[in-house]
Length: 84
Figure 1: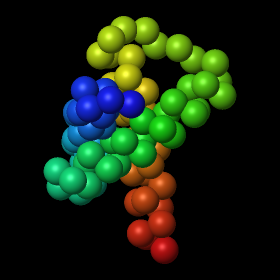
Figure 2: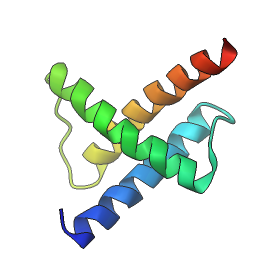
Figure 3: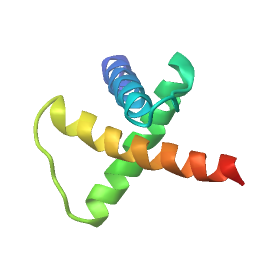
């Protein structure tokens, strides 16, 4: 992975984490936290979509949707763990 891909990955992760924080109403974790949630969510979403054989095309939309779904699942799981 070169520098350009890393920056793109972090931008997509940040956008996905930010959107997930908005959707989950107040579960955003700040800028760095959103990027971390988005990046981990991208891996989670990519694994889940691969497992379910779901493919979303596009240069920007597909990766953002994949990372967003993974980020939403991750924030939901974090919320369940915090309640206990």
